[in-house]
Amino acid sequence: MAIAFSKYHGLGNDFVLIDNRHQSEPLLTPEQAVQWCDRHFGIGADGVIFALPGQSGSDYTMRIFNSDGSEPEMCGNGIRCLAQFIAALETAAGQAPEGSKAYTIHTLAGVITPKLQPDGQITVDMGAPILLAEQIPTTLATPGEKVVNQVLEVANQPWAVTCVSMGNPHCITFVTDVATIDLADLGPQFEHHPAFPQRVNTEFIEVISRDHLKMRVWERGAGATLACGTGACAALVAGVLTDHCDRSATVELPGGPLQIEWSVTDNRVYMTGPAQQVFAGEMA
Ligand code: ZDP
Image 1 (tube, rainbow, N blue to C red):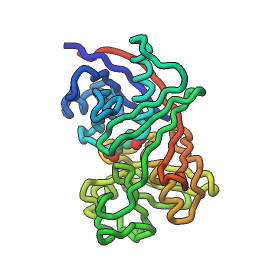
Image 2 (image 1 turned 30 degrees about the vertical axis):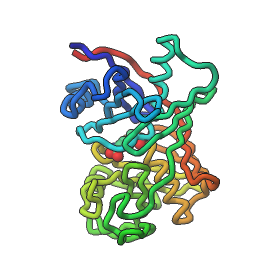
Image 3 (image 1 turned 90 degrees about the vertical axis):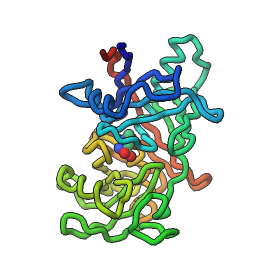
Image 4 (image 1 turned 180 degrees about the vertical axis):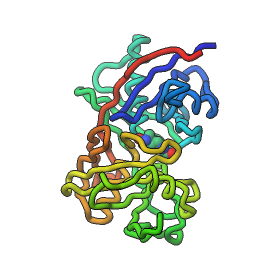
């Protein structure tokens, strides 16, 4: 049976999107997702995202498999792509509501709300950041403590790291020049460090100014990617905790900029950025 798919990207972080609204189990196994994500033997993507029926009153459910077949709790760039994908599906079905559309999406990190803006950008309420060590999870601090500017030894070097979960785990370290970071060498050593029982996404951040961060990322289960939405949110939160930046800033990724705000009023993180369809097809 052929399965229809669409290919989207958010700042070059690319995903295969599947209309899975008619059943609550993903149409692909993790092993199939690995094949589809392969850039030589498949479609090529950083992950596969399924638009599933809603749960407990939410409009839809999102599930995602990384390109290695593991399943993350959340995906910031992916949920912007999902919002565009759903809007297109609803328009095709003649059921698109007027005005700016907001969706409640059930994820393994709770209900996340993306909102399509009139200019085509998508703003996502990413929820409150999780800062307690055992909830990230990391063993870098005792339960109940935060991990802020803590020393972690990787590749025989001390790194000052701050850990934040946006539903998925992130380890952030501030460096003087992101261009000099050997991601392929360092990334896997952070990802598989025993201090992170669920492995970790790692962000290297250069501070350009208090409202402008430059980031390179090594993603858990996907490697070096051009952008990471949850990572950009986690980086801004880490920047505020370590007094490197203000609560609202541009995070510049290899694939382009995201606007991130950690609201003082409601403690939630808001991410604004683009998502684009590239093509649609059918997989045998
Ligand atoms: O937590 C993980 O395993 C990530 N690889 C999930 C994907 C995160 C993503 N890049 C994002 O934008 O948040 C999609």
